[in-house]
Image 1 (cartoon, rainbow, N blue to C red):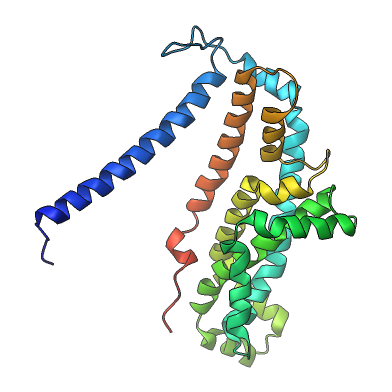
Image 2: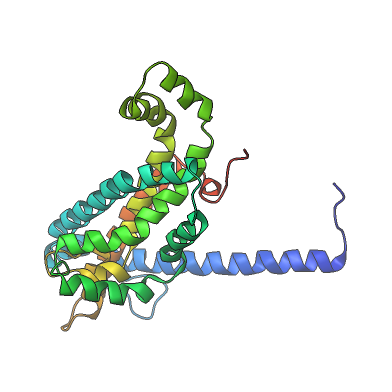
Length: 276
């Protein structure tokens, strides 16, 4: 490979790295500001706080009822994960193994909830859920979140399924395996890494999903990200440090699950397709 040594190329590369560095530095500075504020006793007009404390975390835990919020958050997240896998994996298998008229159109429809901003379809979706009595409850939040997560599972799983040689399935059929036995004893062990990766990424997406949850949640079905929004914009005077402590808890929760997900999946697998 011949390396391009032209001055214009070097300047373009330097500009790209400078832009990336500027973005990363600003992102880290914003996160650091929130984290430092959550541990500060008082921080006004100085480079560092006047003192350090952890009491804002206990204050946020009590004031915002974080135990109940986290319990509801994980209830909703795991229900979305379970239902997304239950619906998405068989659908992905059907789309990966079968050719039928309109298949490309169906794939395009699955892409739309992932490409279109959630608020675009979230408002009419929330209207329908309110009219049918689902919105304002945990079931409404789960149904709303399934709209983008089921297509996400399908699109992640299709490459994993396409990598499995159909001769393996044919051999299992020859030896008398029915559809259920084929899935449990042959496909499931082979697809386990892909299923785990897809469901972990769905978990992270659900924890981070604000728009659809905000539009359909009620007082007892708010996830942590929605509760954080209400804490920031609700009436009354609240200590900034306690809100920052709540934000740190939210960031840490999401980051932990994201790190776990990335240990099981290569992000390029989401868009890659196996060569036939």
